Image (tube, chains in turn green, brown):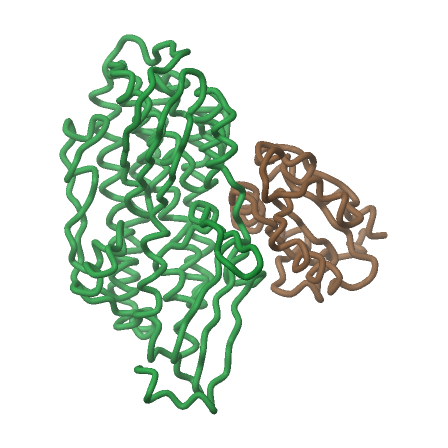
Length: 379
Length: 134
């Protein structure tokens, strides 16, 4: 709605956050409503800013990958992997193939974990508690596998500069393979629910539409872009690690609404399971990690396809520590189109629309420093 | 037959953590661990809560808001800090935007260590927090 047409007298501001049961993270959304209709939308970041880009400058490279894993607890490998790939690129390290494969296994398993988690949160947002419980139960399988592989359920820290932190023994590999059919079966089941269930369609279909042109305009990334028929996936378009060795499809949908975003993610679970299966079958022998102490000086950019979309790291390296690191998390690109999606929708549709971009604010959060009312700098 | 004297209702408060502790706290509610069978329940408002689970290194920007939320909980509440961040700041202790530990800002009854602690540890901690509620 354009500003002239708006009747500001009858507008109410509906605050969501900073501490709200809808979001597990502190974030503030300001939704302007006229009756049931959303007329404007604004958001405020900064409740989750921890200044990781500054802290990492005082850490050595082995400490940095652990710290970067804590950028986000859900997709924690995405950041340490992007950083490792960047430092390896600067130092021209040829990482052992076994290390790369093992990193890919945990990375794809993490995508499954993240999508299952998101599916549960989405189902809860539309009041479908059963799916929330079911998908979190299935998610326990992936966490169990992480515990077998790395000793931790959440903080995997599998990627280090020069390879993978842990080796994968045959027994664990077989265990991972034996769990995959269960995850695929669940994904098939959920695909059936979300394509056929009339009540789900009523809540999600044609809600929060973001057309292809708008998606291009906002440069959205990840499943949100792919649901708006933008065929873009870093794993295919500029392959990193060993993705060239595998056969897999990039899931693209043309519905451009909340339902399509859900279906794209459910189908991606199956593709990731396929990649993991190929990974374990093709797993080469040999070393899994090279020793790495000192880095050459240089600067580079590295990109990986995190569960939520493109995750880019720009880094300048020194001998012992990184000199500068800039993280561009996927949610950062996906927040601005929220306004387009939300305008003229009903209040009840606000939660599923906000959740449909899979927001992760601990990755994204930035602050701006003001002194005497003037902007000094953005961090 | 013995009866449970108190069904603790839990409110979860994120003070800027990395989501690790938060998803483990939510995992406690789901079928893998299911603390609902012990009478515990996640509630949406601090006004209904007996136990407040706090995660994260205390963010300076949201400090005032965190205090407001905690004050809303009724008297006799138990504040439980989850994770290394609430104890010492963990990995983020050198940050310019955090102000750990949590105990500096509010009376914390107990801490559950770990980065992040497993759901088993959180449940064991909650069982101990029940004693403090009596």
